[in-house]
Image 1 (cartoon, rainbow, N blue to C red):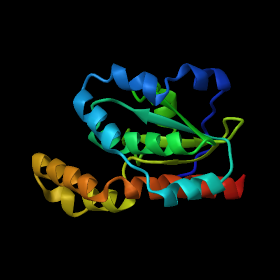
Image 2 (tube, rainbow, N blue to C red; image 1 turned 30 degrees about the horizontal axis):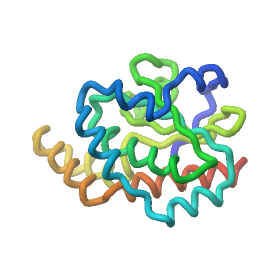
Image 3 (cartoon, helix red, strand yellow; image 1 turned 30 degrees about the vertical axis):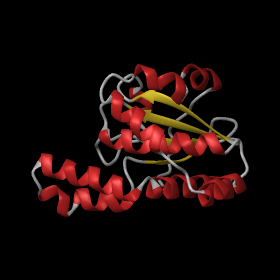
Image 4 (cartoon, rainbow, N blue to C red; image 1 turned 90 degrees about the vertical axis):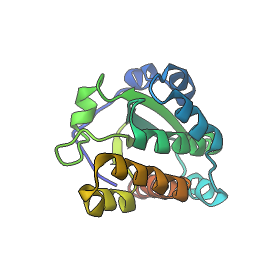
Length: 183
């Protein structure tokens, strides 16, 4: 989880951002994959219980674009969590349409997505996660970096398929737990 204190969001901007259900039909790139990952995504009860214990309400603001392979493997899983935990809600903002939000959540100097931003009931940021699970990110920046692009992306897809969203869920729920503990 990253922390950031330079980002502000108000309720109007939150409300203007689409929910996942509103956003999904607008996906043009990878539309079939977005639908398939969402359809197959499952959230084990342990993550639901952990997120529910964190209280809330908590807002999850996602920066994404439909072309992003990491987003298509992560965002539908987070949405499925939100569907099972009444104290969570989620909205999606386009990375390119919201440069102020993206610039406050860079991975180094990179505009990597997805980014999941944890906001409290008053829309104050408590932390953020992204662009991919820590284990996968370490591999991409380490041994995976030496592979040709097509091979690297093939291995990334395999990693996500083997993980079934568990790492994303663990890291996002851990962020919510830390946010709740510090609130």
